[in-house]
Length: 336
Length: 276
Image (tube, rainbow over all chains, first blue to last red; front, side, top):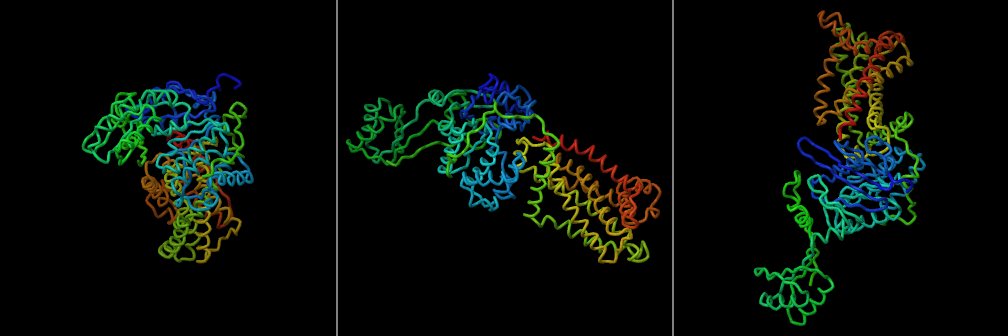
């Protein structure tokens, strides 16, 4: 980096946005180093999208300031727009046009010649596996295809900073994994990425650093490991074939994992904190040797709700204004 | 999805880019043309949205001419030079209302947010949409003159003056469409744009000399009709088609158009920018 001001891809100080009586963003500070993935985590209505809107010059901050690679988002908005790509819930593509027409128009708007625009569109469609669908109406596109096209449209100018607003919300697990791969590739080519998500898991997978936003404020900031450490361990859940084995199972858990399991008798379900995943295998072996059968085994990761409960002392969806969906439980079932 | 291919070129760091903080006039014009191209593709995709500009000129020309012709000018033939310019102006101006309605519908889509995040001239999404709409005015103009010709309208000014008259109407309607574009930007829904616009449009087009001679009206109404810019435009088109004369009324119309653009283009763009 040539000078200290552009050391940060994003530097925001005390950003405020007020809608009527609602302080949607209430003094957000952010520092995003160039070349990293930065996750902004929070429930619906926490102020994630509003924050991105201000950083992406789509909304004027009511207070504070923000700089993108050292350029002020209000005074140098036109420069900032040359440095960013925006993909997400709000900045989308034109549904009445085909994928190819969309990319062509964006490329032409960005100053590419007709021939360059054609080459660029073809290249992006190829890279995102949309070549076959290039001329079909967007109405026939799946959710995953739409997101890919959205992202492709943001990459035409090869911006050094890309905003992804909930890039995988509503996608099936396979498509989500593909989206993650694409985001990792982006960073490898030198992009800085800021993404918002409601999923702790997603932030964990992708982000170098995470900011947790609640009611318009950053309530925690750090690496995914810092954050998880503050939330606590995953829990192991076992359902026994024979409820009568519960006593023996609890004893085995205490011996092997060194923790106290909790029994919920009606379902013959045992829950135990899982501090060390390696030792779960030992436990399973012990249970089999003791002849204790399992119907089901699952690992319950800390959910966003629990992150919130731990960090803020209140639950994620308790009083966020326009929120309905509580954070999806991120249960990874493993059939035993 | 095949993840980004390894051939993906490295991204140029922000500090090594040449950046400009202002969109120049050249960029604004280029962006406008691109956005207009987008508008034309949309018209091609949904040709049914052209129904109003195709049916209205045909219907109105037939109806008004045969209903009013005998009463006002004695016979249909001598009414044609009076009514065709009137219907032309009325039809094309009515078409310009659609600009505001469609702009509202378009702005409700997410793609307008992407336009706002791009380093393009701020005015381009608006000016492009308005430019594309001149195609609609051209269609309405051609159809009205064609209907007139089929019914026996023979302009004395010749074909060049008819084209000049058509261009004059298109330019003035384009200017007027900035008013409706303004409503389109500030209104909440497309139907409210339609409502407000019609409220303005009806008095403006009917309280003019478009369909009947002004001297049949009461004095207080004549006063308004005579200052109504639509009257000047209609008179300008009549003069042009009849004699090929580009007179005072034509200049007044162009001046009026320029004033409307000077007022409403900045208003519309400012409202559009504030809409976040």
